[in-house]
Length: 424
Image (cartoon, rainbow, N blue to C red):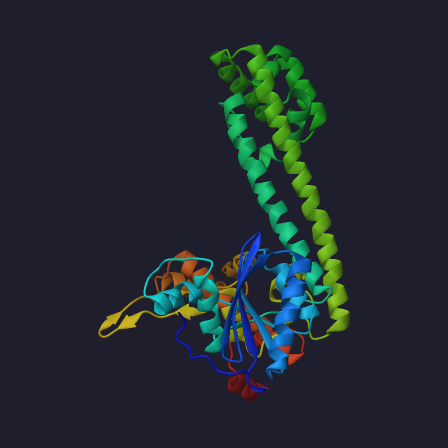
């Protein structure tokens, strides 16, 4: 049972509809005019609309001016619920999955989880005001977020395809000794097109014919590299694999290269689309930063905004940190002092994007080079932790850049406001 006493709805307090969401079913708990209601119904648009309309009408008849629908994020299963609630004019909010797990122990004094228990836990959190803002992003922000997810999938596809190529090449051509720049460059592509990277076909062609064919395909390729490649093929064929087995290995390798090309092409098309959407956003909000050479590209700006949504929704850069999960968590009890770590309770893709943005900025001569290398060499900070510190710095920079409505000024990056004003 919930710890909260039943109270009649009032005009000042919204009636809370706490919902535990699963793929097929929704479990709801609420209190209206001192009476508890527990419902279970299908996670289907028409059913959701019927049930929410009935509960909202009952709440308003009891004197409530607002109805708040609260749910825990579940990937995609919550979308219909919150969308319908918004269309019906109801308020919507999230509760943190971590908060639900911890509150469940407080509510029932055990760690068990059931579909009947969780709505009461969500209700308790909402009653305490422990909710998170739910936003329905308008276009082009919503489109940008969708494209960003697709780009991340394509990026993962490229990585998986390259891993598959290395693994399959090792089986087909175990003594291939060139680096990835060769394999994925013009020379490697010529080797694939002419011989399928198949050492048995290379050796059958003969040294003279092989060298002539590769030199014609890639005139800039050194003869010594071609000779080395042929020698490696001669070593690999000593394994004497069955011919039909080798043919299948070559086919698998070609398929991996096709996958690589597919995902690479998809990435480029998505990149162009996202850059176009960011230009559209800048026409709507001229405070959004323009690309700055040596700092950030328009594509990476598009990726950041895809995850944050409108930066005007945040009152400070620290809110952006919390949204990304880059805020610090302190562990301290009595004389014990634990290490400060980031919470990682925000958008993981935003953290990934920020890491990709700052990576080229930590070179010694780049924007954050001195700051990063001071962390590494003087403070003896591990590399991953130092990169996280730079990510936090960059969030502050980006939010200040947006809020100031001014052009990027590198002199401001490591100078506080008072010092900057004195210098000015």
